[in-house]
Length: 310
Image 1 (cartoon, one colour):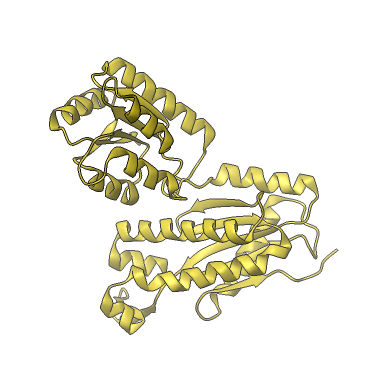
Image 2 (cartoon, one colour; image 1 turned 135 degrees about the vertical axis):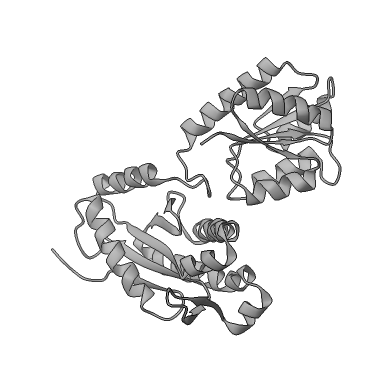
């Protein structure tokens, strides 16, 4: 997949120059003419890097950068601030807002491309991540689980999955579905920040599947917080009619009408508190079983593994 770069500048000539330079390197370019449009694109589309002009209408580059870097889900997105020549305040302002680098206008395209390549390499090295949420992906998840097993410490692994997500995607489309996934990730991050430990781990397996690795004593508080926040947020994902009904109407292959309940969240919690776990595959098998049990319960729920085995 091509690298996606957002170019945000109110000067169309500058945008043209940047687009031509970037497209020569086979980067996919998305354009925004002001800070407000830039922020909307950043929060709704997966991007690899942002070129952000400091002085723009509606929201300036500093404001956009600060909002992005304060978002738990977007803070890893690299931003290069484009500043005016000789204006030290713009440079300082951009860095203070969280920009990863800056370049001064007028700039040499070769220098800009070199900076972009450098930052993309650094970002890829620092974060093996799911492209939608920027949370650690399967390689990091496996490494984390193996690390916990080798440490012989007590741990709990929460396998998290959304219920009725396919039906939601079919009706509302993938863009709305992606926003549900991103908001779910934010809910998980906030829950861990408020009720977890500094060394807790959050990963995105893919699609609507997530994982949290924590301590057994944190599980109830974390799961209850996740469920509470998710249930509170769910109605915002629907139009007024569906929200009022409490379900969406779909049709099966035979054209028969079906009433599908609103999205809910199921959590299966695997722990070595009462049984010895020897390998990662064992964790996954138990997690899938417990998650299936949680899905049989009404609305959002979690099921913990309490079986004792030698």
